[in-house]
Amino acid sequence: MVELVDPAAVVKPERVRLHPYDVMVGPVTHLAEERERLAQLRYEGFRVKPLGATIGGLVHGVDITKPLDDATIAELRRCLLDFKVIFFRDQPLTPGGHVAFAGRFGDLETHPFIPGNTDEPQLVRFEKEAKVGGFENVWHSDVPWRAIPSAAAVLHGIEIPSIGGDTAFCDMYAAYEGLSDKMKERIADLQAVNDFTKAFGHSLDDEHRAKMHEEFPPSIHPVVRTHGETGKKLLYVNRAFTETIVGLDPAESHELIDFLSSQTNALEYQCRFQWEPHSVAFWDNRAVQHFALSDYWPQRRVMERASIVGERPF
Image (tube, rainbow, N blue to C red; front, side, top):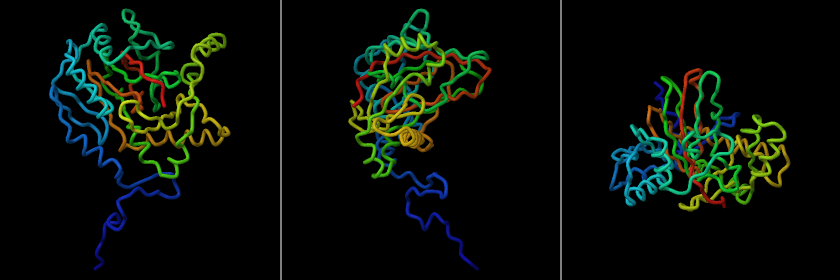
């Protein structure tokens, strides 16, 4: 009788390519250190339940609809940097309360293309239904086409479809760390051109598009960004806004953007949040990309977002 052996038992615990496809399988070992670090973290004013290996934490024990003391705000800031995106349940924020909470973490920006809340222009309002589809189902960070992109964002779920409409988040530190040393060396000093046109240009006529380009010309940011607070490196390109890599011909540029963007496909780098009315997601826009699932049409989904001004990427 032949003794069967698990094929994985004779393979080192590492990622291997599933030939002939550009697909990697095997344990994602570089996540272990960060996963174990997060598991050991404790906070004085609240507790956190991890959602993904290295990204996402559900916060319990704090009411963000009420004024918070400086110590709690400082702990929430630290928690955000640790978990990259944090979530809250049952937080019926008013528009004013939403702006007040987000404003504790920095100055707030206004978005030039998406309508704001009538009473609070700093709140971007996403109101989707049968006649207004959701086109945010692509991995991206917010406003990299700005010279100074958002540092973070606070998204409040107001009206949630009965099924669908989740948001997924990807750890872009992990996406960078998972690259080969050869690829890291190749992209170390590359710069990328980011532009709003693909995402927002289709809704503008030529005159208005030209005017907006005068105000928001394409921005050049590093392909590998260094986080201003953690000092960690991360991938900072996406298919929605990154147009070209400086110094590469178009074919090579598009191929590299596509390859680097595809690192978000690794489920091991992700967490996924199922919305309920008055849930809140607070993400570090420097450290993560997000993907809003557009699987709820023609149901109605209403969200509002406040974005915190960041720093010039380096």
